[in-house]
Length: 248
Image (cartoon, rainbow, N blue to C red):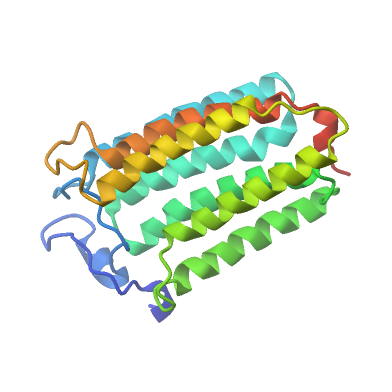
């Protein structure tokens, strides 16, 4: 297969286990979380099932967006669904391509939030421009993902770049608004994201680590606490008048 699609990192799948042949072909992810890999269709059981929190919350978002007729949040709601779905697949299969799927879901989510802010800031004013932004953003981050091993750039930092852009565009959108914007939900969301990231770091550094425990894992807590953060992210944008999101 194309060399740039293959990972330089080793995988942890045994020859007699599911996904071994594909993992041999594409290589492993750039990180090994604490949870012990098991021989089965769900390589990392806890890290797999905890993604259901994203999926169930996204289904509620999708239903709620339709109920209140706020179509500007449709892409955001679906991006959370795909974040959960692709992360579920990644932790079930544990290879380089499924890890990209995990990040692809996050790229969709980041582009959705940044797009909402750019709309509020009147930087993007048409549906065509917004669609172009989504495509270019996800494509650029995809290219960065696949070249990251050759430039020694951890793929996790790509998400950090996206978060920084969210903070900048939130500032620009707030400055542009003709009405006061409450940031209680936004700050609460950031708080829960920091808690979630802390769990993930403790897992990665093996400070909070019990490999054989398939009921509780630090990175699994990242999935669950981040879901709470998304609730407050949604509440933040929901409280902003619909007129600020209108596109031609």
